[in-house]
Image (cartoon, rainbow, N blue to C red; front, side, top):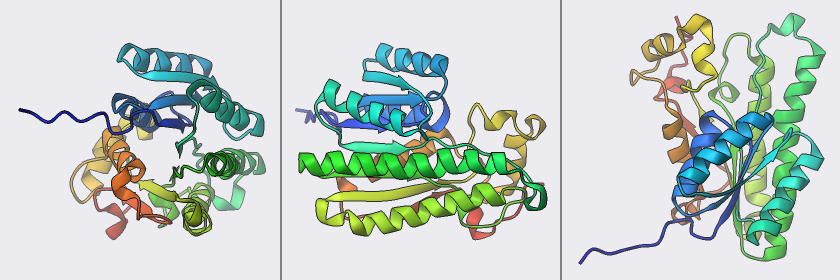
Length: 260
């Protein structure tokens, strides 16, 4: 007779930011399919509602919170929603981030401040508030941050963005140590070129063709590739992995050639 096992994340609750589309949505969708309760955040109300409805139609247990995940009141709303609706908070995926291109010599301060607020402030304080809740529960937890290959190696016109993503790598390393005694693991993922609704509009619609040529294994990542990495770092099988960053780039950072 076949062995029937319950969904992997049954009765676990996850917050995923920036999850209306793209990588965040796919992570939310796959976690929901494995039995997790989801609090899904996006800054765009229409994107939040559409994502929640789609996952709900697929049988997922989910609530939406629209707002800027770099704002402390939005972070508190997400935590409160998770605990009041589902009883616990067990996992976060700090996926929300913005990318702004620009030369270092004339990069505007307004863009820098926006990057810091979403990419760094949002990640740092979501981790802080989530960890405090997990410690109160005395049940451990999983924190996963979204970095980028540009946080490991140079890419043209992405100095500020790459700096913010490098900081996330260090944050995962530091918190991996600081929160280890509470049985909270902290790791990051650094995607390479990934096909999403946003990236397909970049570079005159030639994004996929250019990065397929540039990536050693011959293709861009899909949102599923990144979601699979996230689910591994959230899974009990990875419970002895913390303070690490997993690069998912088809081998690009081994060479780091710019797209042609």
